Image (cartoon, rainbow, N blue to C red):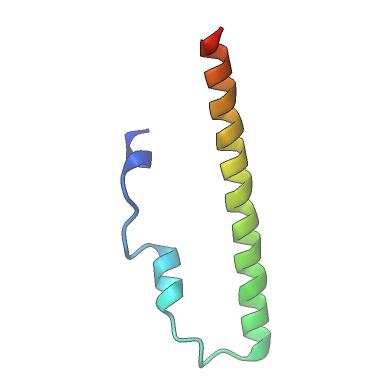
Length: 64
């Protein structure tokens, strides 16, 4: 998709999370937030791995 090459908006969800004040959160809420963010990091890494493997497969196919 062409949109995949465009820069992300500076007001996307990750940027909003980074600006959010953490003072109101309890320790338990912060632990839950960390768990959620770690799961999202894992999901992003899986997507990156699939994209890299897909690209390598395509490159290999067209080199033949």
